[in-house]
Image (cartoon, rainbow, N blue to C red; front, side, top):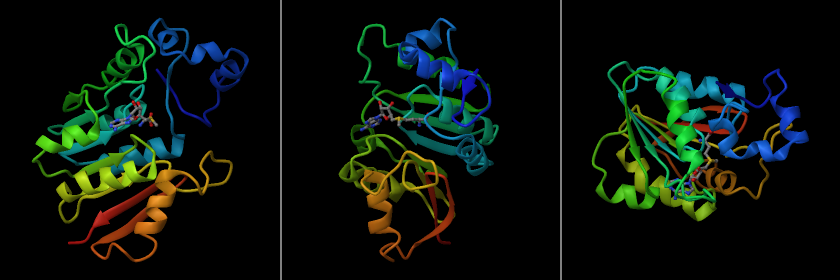
Length: 213
Ligand SMILES: C[S@@+](CC[C@H](N)C(=O)[O-])C[C@H]1O[C@@H](n2cnc3c(N)ncnc32)[C@H](O)[C@@H]1O
């Protein structure tokens, strides 16, 4: 079970009243669903852009809700590569976030899933496969978003798609002009600095580009 911000239901109110429920251990023992860090509309967009893709890469998995959307959407014979060091756990031996992520992603049996438990910059060093869909949602510092773009965007062939999360300001949203992804896409894509790429969708905090054929 997952919870998407904006969905009807009591999870949001419950979390406000009992913030300790945010701890991933609570999801593991069934006190709350896995938490998405994106909206319901973004969730639908992840699934839509993954449709038919055989090689999907997500940088930044957290509790695995966006990864589940990608898995549900991708080709039946596709592979979903999930990159996250899960270094934010306060109890690394137990690492509840990682365990919740694995359970969430197992909510679909579609295709194959490969977990890469390391920083994206390290994973990029040995990567050599063409990527149909890349979701960048890891380290949100502007320089880190740019580094993910440089490291991973080059593996996306013509017709392939890259999604940046937290990269737009939208009504009642959480992003601001100071967000690293917002600053990067504004500087790089909106200034005409990427002639080989076309902006194909903007929804909530998602900024989607496709490499021209
Ligand atoms: C915003 S959360 C991802 C949310 C998730 N995509 C969703 O929508 O539910 C960011 C995640 O990025 C991971 N992360 C941070 N730096 C990273 C890096 N350099 N490489 C890969 N993952 C990273 C963190 O561990 C965290 O789980």
